[in-house]
Structures are given as structure tokens and as C-alpha cells.
Length: 257
Image (tube, rainbow, N blue to C red; front, side, top):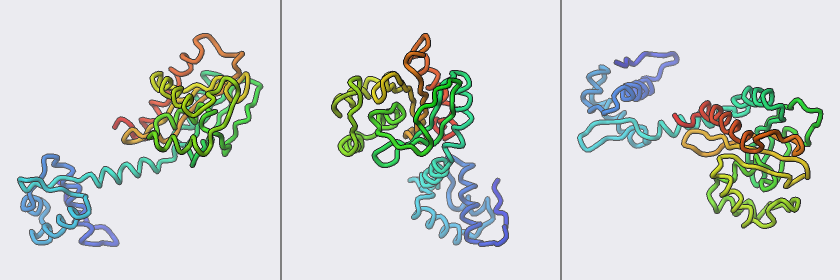
């Protein structure tokens, strides 16, 4: 049983409301107002008033039988807390491990407006240093990390981004937004995105999305390398490993809970 504990500085009305919410969290089948008041040792009148306030704010629902349940407002607040987690802090150790295993430079990126911005980078083992630095902005259609994010946007949002900032790349890159959207559809089936010498000849990137509570894509991780050094198994091998790493990071961000 949840007992309302006094705290300093104390607000009896807040104590009461929080105590009721905590009590209801232990009773998923719901509780009637009189039972809540009795179990918590509260007056019926103030319990009724508190429940009505909580109902009006979406924290509590009442079903046809008169039982009270926790409302979705609490889920919404919890989701916001998870969203506020520093994705860079969560992803950093995974990026370091990824670069150690693959020898490739790894990145964390996020959509900002109409472009993707690099939030973090861990260098690989090679001597080549790529022009991808923390804070760099890039068009989404010429980066695997950008593709991995916008591929899961609602189509109107994607269309707006492509209308504002669609860049022409090499001859290997989709020439038109329509072609780019078709490419995204193909890559979605694989679960990872590839940028194959589309921005710079000889350079490839592979990326996967990171998901948060509810399944929305919050960022992406990717690796970059020289096409001439692409090892056996190619994009499929790298994409499979990235998907596994992304699943671990996404779990820390609340996805799948």
C-alpha cells in the first residue's frame, strides 16, 4: 500500500495528489474513490476533489463502473523525460565500440531544420581523416545519416525538406527528389541506408536510425570509409552490425519498453 509521506517543504494538496497517483499505479484494474480514500486514510471530500482535478488535467480517467485509472498524461510526461536524455551521452560508448570493431569512423547525427547535423564522431583506425566534424551540417539526400532519419518522416515533411534543400551530387546520386524517395523505399526494407559515392567519389557511408519511446526516429548512427577498402560482405555486413548497435542505443532511449 502507498502511504502519503510528508516532505519538506510540504504542500498537503500536492502530497495528496501524488499519493493518489502512486496508489493507482499499483492497481491497474482501477479503484473507486471511496476505496482510494479508505486505503490512503484521506477524507472522501478532498479525495473526490483531487481526483476531479487530476481527471481534468488528463492524469486520471474514470470508467463506466466508477473506477479510476492512471491517464495517458503520465505516459506523455514520461516520454518527454526519455526524449530529454542526451542521445550523445547514450550513444558515445556504442560508437567507440563500433569504431574499434570495424576500424571505421563512426558518427551520430540528428535532423535540424532541413539539414542533418553531426553530433559526435569517433575516428577509425585508418590514416584517412574525413571531412565530417561535430557541428557540420549537410544535405540529407547526400548523407547516409540523413537518409536514415528522413526515410521515416511523414511524406509532407520529407517533401518540404527536399523542396528547400535538395542538392545535386555525383552521377551516382539520385538526380531528382522522386528518385531519392524511391531509393529510401528500397533502403527501408533493408533497415539501413547507404550513400555510395553519391557526394564524394571513392567514399561510402552506411547508417541506421535510432528510435525513442513510441518508435519515432530521433537520430541516426553511421560509418564512413573508402570504397576501395570495403571488406568482404560489403554494405550488408556493415548494415547488419549497425542495426544491432542501433537496437542497443534505441533500447536505452526507451524504444521497445
